[in-house]
Length: 237
Image (cartoon, rainbow, N blue to C red):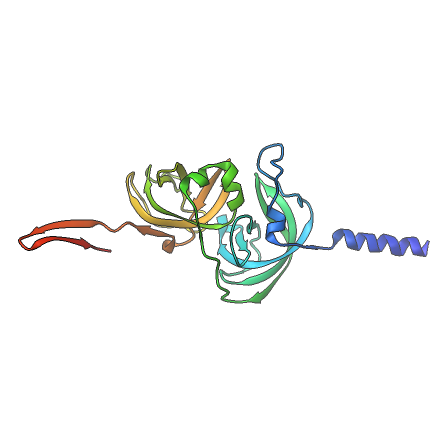
């Protein structure tokens, strides 16, 4: 009886222990699932992962954790409002893997340990607007910091802070109030030299979600002036 009791306790501890995994381990899967959202094979398991915080304040209820090198399948949403982590914190976290309306995330956080502060953030990945609008391609960039270049607004900002942009490869949505309430109201035709942010799956679509006012850069206007000594091109920022 005593041996049986010890074995039962041991199995219980093993069943509840956090699995030490990388974010890539959690995110990568070739199985589309029944709803084509590519759920993690670790859904329901408590895991332990490390990474750097790249964005905070998602809908007041989450932050983004990324592997230091960045890249496809190497970032994840953490649904947690009680812990005050900051961008640049390098942390170790224990939490349960879940799917929130089709987006893989960590929730039910049981432990967060800050290992370092002011850690370098991964560089944003350069992708196209067409890749974001393609569900098959954008799945790999869920939670990842990305950048699109030389894009124009295909629509004005709507009431939910959403507008469409394109670089010629296809339109994708930009949502500007996911991480902070950014004061930008583009009209159709506004040209940006770049927009960067986090890829999020919500409302059955992938979108680009800027995290600060530095996530945008408007294209500089070019003025042509005729002079007796030639034509001058001046760029004003």
